[in-house]
Length: 566
Image 1 (cartoon, one colour):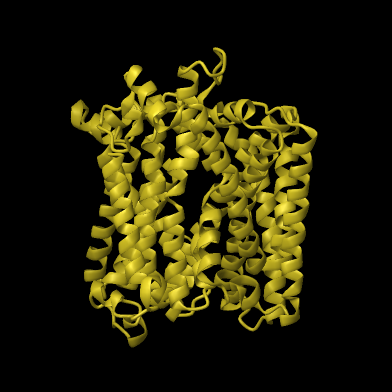
Image 2 (cartoon, one colour):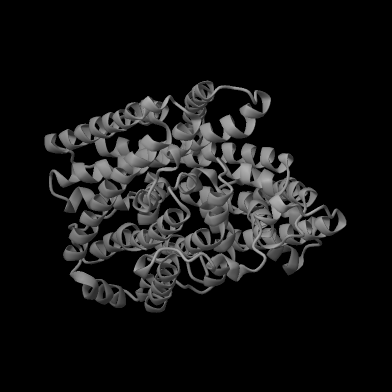
């Protein structure tokens, strides 16, 4: 998958890289006059406003993996995987209404810190460890690898230099992340979001014109008997493998973990100027998350339509994962190809920088400060910078191994489905049920993680690409007594498995909490909603900017899109 890159395109790429790294360093150095205090470095001094928060949330979320993989799914299966983008809006409403207020009022630096105030130190340590591992191996590792793959196709770099490409992308991102901290990260993320959206919109608009507009897409799919590709809610026998019930049951579990409890994402909210800025920023991100359905998934489908229309003189992508690059090479004019390349880099760098900063924050506040509580602010920032460099090195070392996975997006999504349930259950019960106890929390986090790891291994054993685990697959079915029931249990859809794991964790947490009740202190009471509707008692800003109005508008818009594309 190689673009026809010209001199103008290369100039655009170089100017972007120099500009974004230079700007990030300038922002970081500009804030050095504050003495390098940890709150400034890790949480931007609580100065972030809602537009920056919203743009940064979106930019950290959308990586090169999304750009390539969502277009791949659009080419192969139509709009079905757009559910991962639209459903995010619903969980961002939950973040704005129920979680963000507690995070801001408690003035926590990290989400494990919040978990300690609600439960115990043990829960904080466990979540900090899991969050650091997921940030390095999922957020950073997968992003670096896919970004390197795209740049190789774009510039025609030989495969033997893949590791050097990973090191270059990580190094450029690490420079301004180490120097500037969160303020440099979110400021560059806001710019990178604009670049990303502009590049993606250009691809979408040009492809839409080439395909004959929406009517041309519909007519072509109807003629080929594939109008179902324009729908998002599919049946169980649909080739996309993402039935509507799996989305309905499974996405809330992984969505709450990702958007409401994952440090890499929520750290932007923790740095908010006020509770209203935190809430509005989350809702703004939810509104922007509507766009990927039309600027990331739809372009892949339009590439498929253009192939059916013989727009490429009988040529087609060799593999579905090449759809985005294939189309850009053939429909984008010189100069705009460079802009799209910059957008791909923006997607990668924003995700990596956000994850690196969250790892530094987690290690410094949740682990190291426990060993050395009297450490100076300046020294704590120094530790954070060192941890950023170490995390980057570990992620670089891990990235090449991702090549062994047949479906990179599918593997990442599957991993999340088995990591998320115990964390989602612990936070949900902690925020909405005063009876949730400290022992119930740590027991659920540990046991839920172990059960999730076992279930993940079982899920791998069902994949045809994992030949060495076929014996395990058959053995598990025999262990459960054989027959259709055992086969159904072992072969359960990964999104549905996430739901059932979460239900298990909730029941387990409740049982342990009832068996080990504890005193419900005033501090803990301040972190629990006595009634869900209490979350709406805060008056908020006046007019259309009120978080209640914005939540209703976003919810209604998401429902309307589902009605249209059902």
